[in-house]
Image (tube, rainbow, N blue to C red; front, side, top):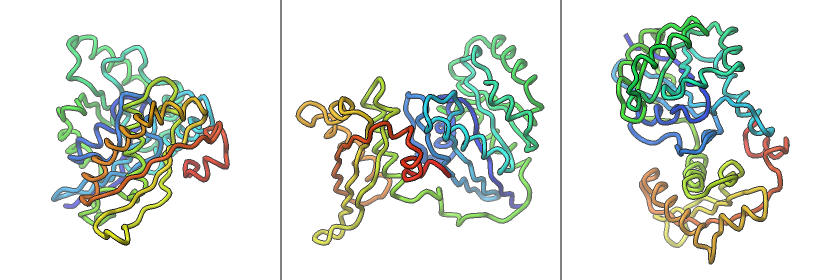
Length: 297
C-alpha cells in the first residue's frame, strides 16, 4: 500500500527543523545557520521511497515578532498546521527552560490534525532523567499521537520517525513526480544559498536585515554552458551595506565565492555570479515590500 501526505514541522527558532528536513532528504533543501529565524518561507521538501511520498513543510520559527516580517513568518508557520495530514512539533531537548510558548500551546489547543512531539538534539543530552522530566511536562500541553527523541544532525532515530509518520498517513497516490525534491523554483533556491553565506559570514544585526533578490538569470549568449546570475543583497541601513561589501570589497567577494560553490552543487552546471548590495530602508516593516518579496502568502 502506497502512503502519501503533507507533514508540517513547527517549532521555535533554532530547534533543528531545517536540519531534520535536510537529513531526511539526504541533501540540502533548506538553508541552515546558527542564527535564529534562518528559515523565512514555508518550504516543501518531497521525500520519496518505495512505498510513500511525504511532503515535509519546513516553516519559519514561531517567535515573538519585532517587525511585520516576523509577524508574517509566525502567522504563515502556524497556518500550515490546519492544512496538513500531520504536524511535527519540534523542540530542543537541551533547552528545558523554553518548552513551548503560549502562542504554540494556544495553536495546539485548537488543532484537530494529529501531532507528534519531536525532541531534537538527543546527541547532546547526558542527563536522561532531566530529559524525561522535560518530555513529561511537554506531554501535558497536548494529546500528542506520539513522542520521538531524535538527533536531526546525526540522523539518530529519524527513520523510526518516518516509519511512524507513514503509519498516520492515508493510502494515496504521489502528489509530485518521483524525481521532484522540492516545489521551490530555482531562483528561490539560489537566493537562499546566497543569503545562507551572508548569515554564516556576518554577525550582530546584519543576518536578520538581509534579503536576496535575483535580478537576472539566463545562459550567457557567448558561453551557453555558463549560467549568468546577477543578484542584489538588500539591507536596511548604509552601515549594513558597508559591512556586506567589506574593506575593498572583501566581504561581498567572500560571500560570492562560497555561494558560487554551493549553487554549482545545486545546479550541476557552471555559473557566473555577480553580487551587488542595496539599501531599502526598514523593508521588514513595509507591507508593500513584503508583498513584493513574496512573504505575504
